Image (cartoon, rainbow, N blue to C red):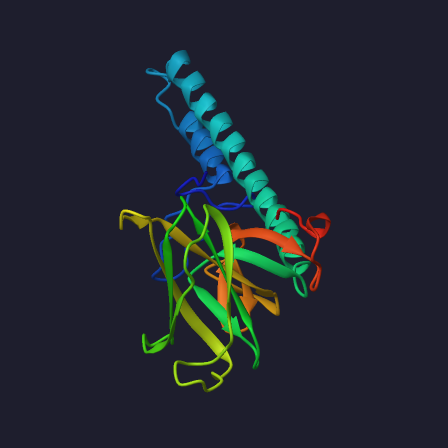
Length: 231
């Protein structure tokens, strides 16, 4: 909640040469009120109701400034807590929604995806970040829910791919040929944290994901669900 035109809690506004301060603080408001009372026409004094209304405005102004200050402190405290929690994910293996896979070296890579229903055929298309086709994997029938397909980390010519981020698209169809909705998962060890417009992003190699996209956190190398926690 921001209040336009309100300066700090300190003294009144200052006017420099050729400069006009358009902000009105509570001290300025109080000085204007006192000046108004001191210069009112004795024959036509200020109405009691008008005076009370101005005092009420001054009281509301002071309270709103206090609210602004408290909200600012809460935002700082919340940001510090969030940054501390996010930094604790460095070195942990996370699973998140996303359409890419991070290759750090030669060897098999797991491609994880969710299916809304059973599929008779599943096609996995792997491309570079520029959209160049790397390999297409036909995995056959898969059941509804979380599935995993192993990619050998090689392109369609049998050559190991370079380390980096690759896009993954899953196309699934049921026995009638109707498309089954599929969503891919990103999996890897968090190597760092960066910030974009104040939003923390987890770094998995060259891939960056938002904390809200994380669906699971586990100790690297763990295979049991006992190590799995929700962020």
